[in-house]
Image (cartoon, rainbow, N blue to C red; front, side, top):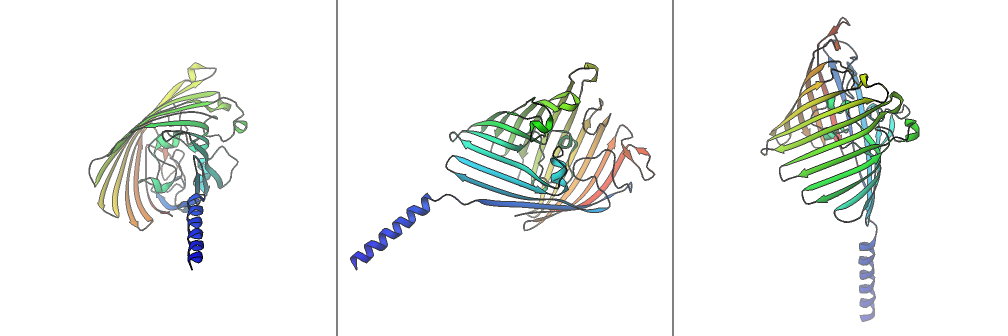
Length: 347
């Protein structure tokens, strides 16, 4: 009996040791979104719009995302795949396809404070994020639409207490391959960050070739801050300016900038309001929208949560200094109004 007990004890000890030494499991997650939008102009699309919600009077599938991550020792990998029109718009420089690699990164933790990441990763610039489940407003800002979407390259990040610093070098903005960009020019990125108990602040910069075929370079400075004032009320702010320089003709140089304010109020645990106010100035017509003036955007969204499902009724009114939009007769007009109903789900 003593021998049997000893053998069982050894087996149990061996099993526990093996379990402790075994590699951790892969962690999976994902999300999905869809929407219906009605534009009061009755136009199915507008010549100027923000990302992902230009289609009107149509039930639209946004994007289904599947994420997988695995960490073993100091090394980790993160895979983020997107399916749908939102993913296609995000990776617009890739061949037209509704299935895209949104992010693919390999990270090595040199120490608890210092890590190096290689791959394709979402931009550090701006307040809003690609996945609809990560934003309170379903439609996007002009700042998001005209800023960088992602970078492909290498970056290093050092964290010391509440402060972080990041620097990296990548392919031209929004290109997964320098061959696709037809350029070996590089983009340089950087960030200084602070994360406190109830708020955070980041100063971001990116500089390099925006689109080599157009012989233009963009240097963008960006500031993002958020503050939780109470259990119910929070504020956010994003200020960004992009200086555009032509390689051959300085008369084509110019800039655009955006100031965006965010306010959130929790009515109940599962019900909240989100308001976004944006002033977007593109008097030089150098943004992707090529507005040629300024736009004041107002967006009010209600977020109603049922478990992992969020239902988002949204109202948006944009007013421009130019005849930026189309009215019901197809003539230019300075304002655009629409409502949408969106759903998001995370798993």
